[in-house]
Length: 244
Image 1 (cartoon, helix red, strand yellow):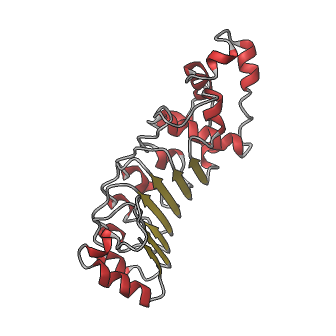
Image 2 (tube, helix red, strand yellow):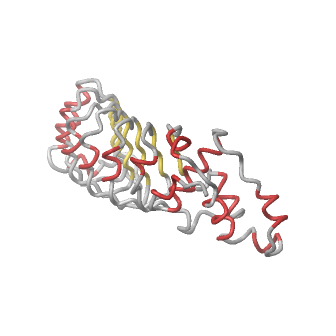
Image 3 (cartoon, helix red, strand yellow):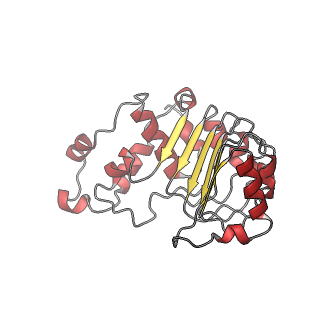
């Protein structure tokens, strides 16, 4: 029996994301859902296509994956609605439920040692500690869920150049002060103190946008702390700042 390297990942949807990437990059052969349906008894088409199929998810997660294959992954994208394995499991998933939500990154540093880019568009990750070991990471995007409060684990990621934390709950940006970030998005963070960003001498773009926006109204983040002055300093430095 071949040991499955993905077993070290705590979150089954994170495992599915890695499988999806390995298939998309042809490291693994594609999963043939038509063949699966022919060889497995079950619901009629109209029934099975409108539900989460545990039997398909199980078959995917049983695919043997080696550590060497995992090490080939440089970019991992999980948008749920845009991943092939999602539609193999639930053909007509409407995106309104949380069956495909990634909630833990535990094990990602050991399973994907050379990961350079991570984008999770359907997640509720609240602990970034596993990313502290992803030293090759250059791009990180976490959108939705509002679960992240502490970016401390990112403080040692010297390769990180692009960070998108959209609609999380980050208030303390001091751990980012020593990074060589070039692009930073803090959409939906109206209470964050931006003063630590003054030390980001490599910063080129900063986005702080609200979920709800009325033309001509001042963004709440500008009125908080000393943020108006910080934004002015960054703009004088040549940083492209979008605040609304």
